[in-house]
Image (tube, rainbow, N blue to C red; front, side):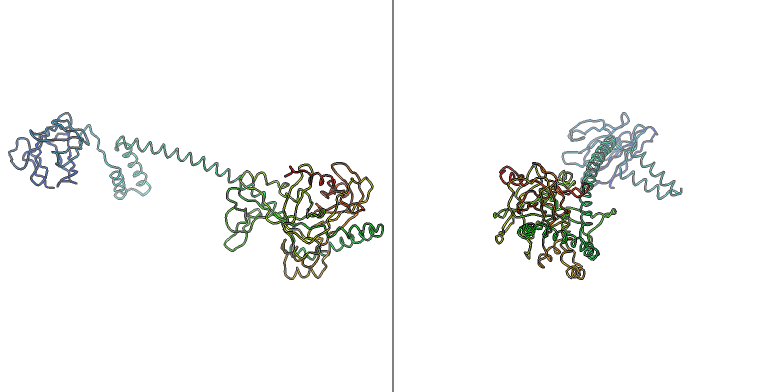
Length: 527
């Protein structure tokens, strides 16, 4: 540093103030000039250097700028005549300096910062200095590492607390308060998000559980042999009953023969779709391309990814009515998700049920036909469907003009037990072929049955036990899958739509009176 020493030095007492001029600009920048004398003069050399001389020193180099003299534990700066001194941006002729005051000499002169050190001033350093001193202590101390670390933390904490400026400490406290607020707010958001996720997971898990139960009803390769042997006996029993019906009444055989072509096997599936962007709820797929399974054995479902759509499959029966291509079935088949306990909870998550596939197979037809929902009754378990494309003219069934009476004979037709009963009717060769190909897919099995001409409804005979405007009760033997089939009188007219079975009451069945179908067809306000 190009700073000349004063020609005379005053003795420094312990209680005297010591000043340091930190040069911010000019040739002396990044250097410090220490001031301990009671009085000095500041000169500016032709090259822009700041020089300090004792007030009584005799010298004549450069330009005199100002004088500094000790006063009140500080220094007073006084500008020489004709010179400009600026302190903290204000022009002054004389000023008692305070710690960290900024001094500018002349209009374009160098700028310095004044640091005061004395028994009334505490040594203050920057955060970097404090951390650097702490690191130096940690490196130099000969204590054990744990004690050295604890002492270093205590030293840094104490100095940051006591030696930094009030503004810095206030800023740190404010930052901590803001950080605490952000942490609290984030924790609340995380809690709400976790609750929503857990709720959504539970709801989706409920649908996954439904899918798992539906898989239990699906065919597997191991089921085929047992299925064939078990249902062959049931088919034989049904055939025997049919033979008895035909034996007792030629009219019954005629009714069955005339009605068979109008009775469809219904096969469908539905899933859940996000209302906002149309994404379907799907199975999550792992890196190996296989569906992921939760620890409880249920499939992992998600709106993300490219896995197969999570579908709930169902089967049932429908029948052609009249000559207009109208199909009649149960409401719970036209809107199958209404009995799904997951619908309301998934709806709260922004999901809606949607039919993903709905097919109808006519007896003797080689292919399934797309089926569309038209409307359903709000009072009874009946619905109207239609085929998406026209088919060759098929003579549909007719609605009976009056309800049956207790004791009347009825014939219930449909597809009880769905695919299983038709596989039993298909014969051992057909089942063996499935066993060899291991093809038990819900859709392809039905397609193969149709291609082989094996879609044929079953018929059972019963007696009406009770008849009212709301319900027809009869004892014809049927099973799940026969829902939606026609209940025919001995003239072949539809007196009811098969709706439910009550096994606890000796196998009694419930049917929706034909009048409810007539009411639905005539009601333009039904959905």
